[in-house]
Length: 303
Image 1 (cartoon, rainbow, N blue to C red):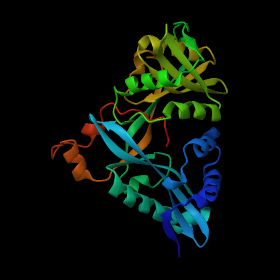
Image 2 (spheres, helix red, strand yellow):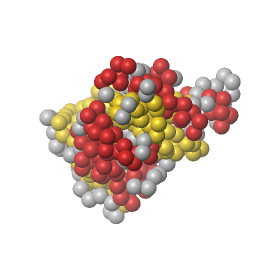
Image 3 (cartoon, rainbow, N blue to C red):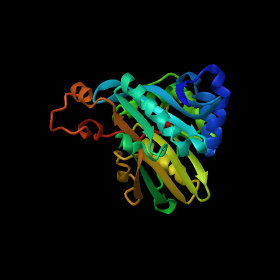
Image 4 (spheres, rainbow, N blue to C red):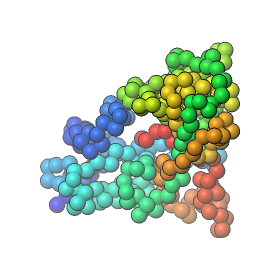
């Protein structure tokens, strides 16, 4: 009979193999994760006999929400052998992780694409990604002066914190965040560009090229000038551009002709609704969207 338990150091190699086999390369993301984020002490496993048949990583964070900092767990790298899916082992492990998370933190997060059954457990889309697609020929020539490949982790972290403070639900600054961002870009063969106005970093963006399209996977900016110059720089590379941003960002002010499409990016589960209401002083008739619905930040991190 199988059992759920915390992973031990001796399980690390088997868990990494399971993640690689189930998650694949994902354009380099899996290797980045296993090298820089994975910590076996944060993994729950389902063990059948002497085999690990399913694993789930539970990663703690703090997010800024409604003027408060609250603890959350993010579920990542949910992996299982094919027979584990068919026999329900993965779901049993998922439920055990939820039970643990319910007792630890107020909120649980999961990538919208991670498991198809997350909504059965009261997960709701609260972080929306918005894609803006446009052709280079329609973009005004703002010039690219100040855009460079130079990166400075401290400058980037300071800019990110200023940018994120205008939104809800972002991870409170964590040690090594920018270092991991740059390592991830390297593993995924993405390019990182910065925009400096004199000595001040006012923007950075991460992009990669596929066929005739530049995909701007993350863009952080201090002002409209920085945004315009970085988009101008991106549009110099290929005839088509796609910019990924939060559903609450108004990039249509700069690219009003872009075609837009929205996707649920991160799902949210409120583990204790009564405590959540008390924490944020929500009235009986107020929806949880009162807190989550205002300018939620698209989370580029999947971990």
